[in-house]
Length: 352
Length: 163
Image (cartoon, rainbow over all chains, first blue to last red):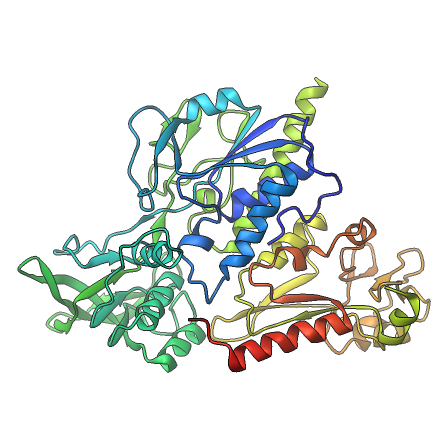
C-alpha cells in the first residue's frame, strides 16, 4: 500500500506538526496524505509495528504483510514520518487495558500530545471484543477471535515465542469476518475439527454465504440457528459449549430476522477451545470524556462533526473509531477525509 | 516507454486480479477521495455477500471511442480512455457501446468514467487504486509487465508453497 500515492513533493515538512494516534489503515492513509502536504507526522501505536488489524489480526493469506511493510517503510524512509511503537496514548493517568496491549512499554498522556502538536488525529480502532455473555465465558481456553488471530500474528511474525494453542476441537461463535478468519486460522494451524456456529442462518451471516461456503469446503463445519447458553468448564478447562437451537422471527431493529431460542433444545458441542467472534467495539484513547473530546457512552465511538472534528477544535477522529467495526477501505477513506479536513483547518487558521 | 511500443500494444494496462481481491473497498474509497466524491472503480455485490470492484478496462480497440460521434471519447498517450468534456454531447452512445457498462452520463449531461488518475499520471504517479490496494490485486504497467506479473503469480500458486 503506497500511502503517499498523491505525493508530488518530497515530504520535507515545514507546514506544521500532526500527531496520529493509531497506525492502522485510517491512520496510515491520513499520514500519507499529510506528509504529501508537507506536514511532519508522528504516528503513535501501541503495537510493535504499524498496520493495525491488517498486520496483527487479518490473516496473511487475506492481506499480505509485505504490502503493509512496504507502505510503512515508504512513509518512514522517503517521507520522514516518525513511528513511535509500543506507545499507548491515553487521556489522564488511569490507562485502560484493551486487547493487543502486550507490547506497550510506555504510556503518553493524550492531553500532552494535543498541546504539543498543531493537530491530532485519533484512529485507535476497535481493540476490544464483546464477550459471549454466558456462564463460563471467562474460562481458560475461551478466547476472543481478535485475541486468537492476534496471538497467531505475533507468533508468525516472530515477535513472540509463545505458540498459541492449536486445539483438537475448536468452536467458533459468530458469523462475521472475524469468525471466518478465526475458524480458517484454527483449521490452517492444525485443529482437527472446527465448528463455526451462528445464531441466524447462512443467508444472514454478515461475512456472506460465499465466505461461509468457502471455508466449509476447506473442512470447517457450519452449524446455524444455535446460540451458546453456557461454556462447560471442568477443572478450569473448557470441555464444550451448550447451545440452544434458534428459530427466526420478525425482523429486529437491524432489519434481519430476530433469532428466538427454542426452549428445551439445549445440546452440547464438545470443544477444548472456544473462540468468541461476536463483535469488536471501539477503543478510544479516553474513558467517555477527555476535555472536549467525547465518546458515545453506549457505542464507544468518538463523536465528531461533519468535518470529523471532535469537541476540541484541533483534534480529529477517523476510521472504525468513529464508525464501529467496518472494512479496510472504509477506514482508508475515512482517514483520507480526516487528513484533508486537518489540512484545511490548519490552512484556515494560518490565514486568520 | 517509447511511442512505437505504446501504439503497437495499446500502452499501459490495468487488470484486476479477482483471485486476490478481498472486496475491502480501498480502491473505491481512494478513487472517491481523489475524484471529489465520485468513484470510478466501484464494488458491487455479485451474490452470496461477495463484493468485487469493476472499472474501465481501457480497451485497446475501445467500442466507446468508435461509437462516440464527436470524438470526445479518446485515447491518451498512455492508452487511457478519456472524455473531452468540451466535445461530449451526453448522447449515451458510449454507454450503449461499452460491453462492461462503464461510462455513465452525469449532470449536467456528459459522459464520465475512470481517467486512470490523469492528474497523478501527469506527475509520474500511479493511479490511486493501484497504489493503495492492500492485496496488490490491481496490476498495472505496460502489457508485457502485466503479463509477467500475472504469470509469476500463477507459477507461485502452482509450484511454490511457502513453509
